Amino acid sequence: MIIKMLVRPLSICSIVILWGLAASSLMAKPTPAGSADTAVVATDTVHVLNMVCGSCDNTIKTKLRKVAGVQSVQADHETGTVIVEHNPSLTKDDIEKSISKIGYSTKTHPANKAAHEGLPSCCKKENQ
Image 1 (cartoon, helix red, strand yellow):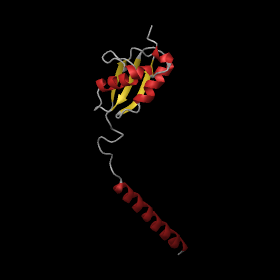
Image 2 (tube, helix red, strand yellow; image 1 turned 90 degrees about the horizontal axis):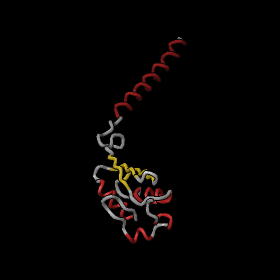
Image 3 (tube, helix red, strand yellow; image 1 turned 180 degrees about the vertical axis):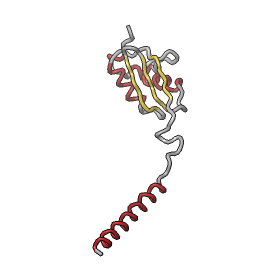
Image 4 (cartoon, helix red, strand yellow; image 1 turned 45 degrees about the horizontal axis):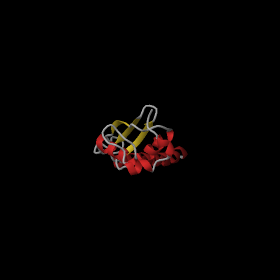
């Protein structure tokens, strides 16, 4: 009799736990296509002509990250390159225009003169 009483509550508890697991798995929503886990990201490398110091790197990274669609930025003044991961709706030309507006020149877009004048003095030097 005591064994039946012990087994019976365990069985009811087991059923409740199993029912809860089954219900939670049925309620789980699949990840839709195009969500953050499966989002498409484009990567472009832009050659910047007048990036001369670490301050240039930081200025470009900080300001480009604020551009809508930009997800990450790597800048290297030693190689003169900026690598940008972004939404595919943003084009390489858009990125180059943004760099120009910050005050730096690319192969296809000269630096905005007013923005260039506003850069720290170390960043106004040209590559040697």
